[in-house]
Image: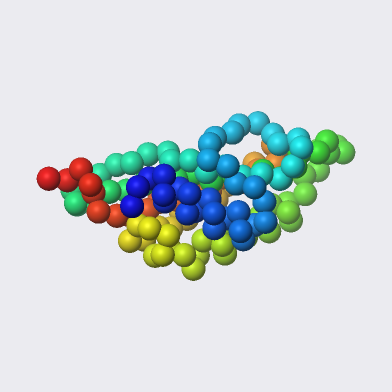
Length: 130
């Protein structure tokens, strides 16, 4: 499976399950106009223990619409729900979106700029192995 096809499959799954627009690309900062998500390939590398396996690292960043907060309080419940929604969306697709297997290895909330970042690691045949 190509990198673009895998990224697109993850993007489509999240867009359907989360009910928001997912875009191929990266973004820093805040989203002041809407909830939106981004998906991109971070790296492709050879598995250090098996030259025949390719490891793909994807990043997913999902933004909640940024709003000015009163004082220093940041609500955490929306981010906890978003973390669980990303996990749930991808959990049952770990072996059906292209590579042999992928998994969400980490999800980190950013309460200041109102987004969560998920790291995904996938394994498939190494197309560059000889």
